[in-house]
Structures are given as structure tokens and as C-alpha cells.
Image (cartoon, rainbow, N blue to C red):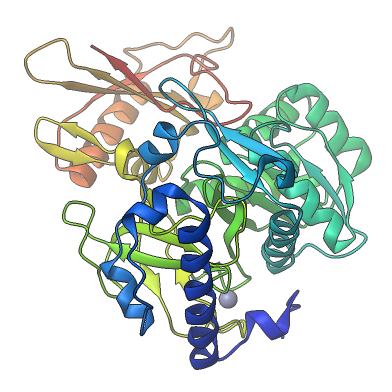
Length: 433
Ligand SMILES: [Zn+2]
């Protein structure tokens, strides 16, 4: 059997797991009612009889965090908060989250679980190319790696050339990064004459943006090692909420700490395992910032049966994207991940793309910009738009997108390096309004 970081917790039989969840849930509700006015006003004092009763409780949303910015939802005095992080608010103020020393310990523990599940071992060198700072990515991976006993290379995000140099010279066992940044690093290395699949990496740990199985294949081809999905969000704890094991059949949720549910995004009604909906999480052990039924906005589904790796925790399917990433184009719902899945299977395209949504006309137009592989580009970097190979590629891409989305879209082939490369989270969609 594969190595499991915390066998007692990770292979706990379901009945015992649910008993533990119920006890911790009751404790969390009591703790929150007692200490946070927001929860006191919303939660009545009746004790939950079973986990199913959770569905009776009101949701907590990102707007609640914004309305109580910065510290209004804390359940401990600020002096007991050991660290704060913040998520970059797409609009306006960031969301500030706090951790007690005990919360940071839980975070290290759950990060250690997902990193060991992805192949991390004591003594391995790990290059962390997630941003360090208020963003939870860098320090989350850093603390988890130290807990395991790995050797950390805290490269942080950005500085693509330096990332490549470190990979080449230090030869880490693993790389942790956003998938889009990792591809950018691989591309830069290849241009410099060192294909990334010759570096001897044993695993890549990727997250912080939704990515498809097609993107996984691109990453695995580029680096010559398996790519693992690690999920999290700062409102719950940061990365480490869930992660893939070697079976890569869904992401194991640390559900002794974070209780997952799936609800209908429109009505809020609970949905059974195997049905796609919005992920809702209740923290079970967090002290500084307990979250009761937090609407993550992420679209996925649950599986409760044990995994062949031996872990018994609930699993979530790979994310389809955030419900607020969904584009509505001429009445058709489109997830950027569906476009990615269709594009990355096309021979002759580089794994970089950008969506331009033009809403200035009466009917919104969706343009998809893609870059052809270097073999289709003339020396000097020019792209001959009327070249038969270029025309055929554009037709092929448009046809695939039409069948994947049920929608006609405009495909533009752009010269190499036109699409901005990400050094952190990729910006896939540009809206013109
Ligand atoms: Zn598993």
C-alpha cells in the first residue's frame, strides 16, 4: 500500500468518521454561537441530532466575510491570532482570514497528507513556485513540506528564468505551482535547450486555478512526471482541503477537518453523491475563523466509497470551475474548463489560450485565441494566415469547439508568445463591455 501520512485519520472507517464529524460539528456550532455575533444571530441553540440536520442551517457566503471586513467574524481575540492571510478580491477589498497557532497546526497536518499522497517524502527537495505572502499558496506548501521533513526551495512565484535555473541546477524531486505557470517554466526551459522532462522530477503538485485532465496530460508530457491536483481556499484554510492520491480518482477531502456537502447552486438544496453541484464546506476544527456551510462557488461532485489507495475520506471530482467563472454566451452556459478540454486535445496547438468575450454588440461574441506549435510558424516567427496548414488548424479547432460547447465561436490563431504567460494564476478571460 502507498504511504499514508496519518493512517489513523485517513483510513478511519466511515461510521467512526461520521461520529467524529458529528461530535466536532456540534463543538464548532457551540464555539461559533458563543463567540461570533454573526453566528449567534443566525444559528438557533437546538443540538444537531445527525449530520443530515446540517442542511437546515443557513449558508455563509463570501459577501458575509466582506461585510465583516476585516476581523468581524473572528471567534478569538486578535491577540490569539497567530497569522492572517488574505485572498485577492477580484473586486474591491480582499478577504482577510485568521489562524490560531492550533489552526496553523491543522493546516500543516492536512498539507502533509495531500503532499505525501502526491508522492512527497521526507528528504525530498521541493521547489515551491507559489507566491509567498498574503496568498495562502506559498506558505501553505512551505509549512506542509517542513512538517513532512522535505527540503524546501522557497522560490515563490514569478521570475521564470530563475525558476528554470533552480530546476536545472538543484534537481528537486517535486515542483509546486499553478498549472499555467508550470507550463510557462517548461516552455522557457525548452527554449533554452533543456527540455523539462530531462530534469528528473518525480511529481508536480498543482492548484490554485481550475485545470483539466487535458492540461494534466500537457504538464505530464512537459515534465515527464505525474501531475497531482491539490485544492483549497483561504476561507476554509488554504491549500490542503483536498488532494489527489496515486489513484487520481478524485481528490481526498480532509473531512475530519472540513465537512463537504454538494448543493444545487440555484436553490441551495442538498444533492446526493455523484450529482454535480456547488461545493459547500463546514470547518470542524478551526478556532479563529470557523465557517458554517461556506459556499465555495466551486462546481464538483462527491464520492463517499473508499478509494483503492486505502483512504476512506470523501472525495470530490476535479473541479469544473467556479460557478462565477461560468460565461453565458448567447444563452449557452460555458465553462472555460470545457474550452480548455477541447483545445488541449488538438495536435498543432500550444497549451496556451485566452478567451475574449465581447459584450458590446447585442449578442455577445466569444473569440478564442490560440497559438500554433512552432512547426507551423515560419522562421522569423511569422504566421501566414492563409497557409493551408494554418487554415486547416483553425477549422479543426472551430469544429471541436462547436461540438464541445454547442456554440459557434471565433477562433484566432495568434503568433507565438502573443498570449500572456502566467507567473501565478492565469487570466483566461478578457471581457470587453
Ligand atoms: Zn485514494
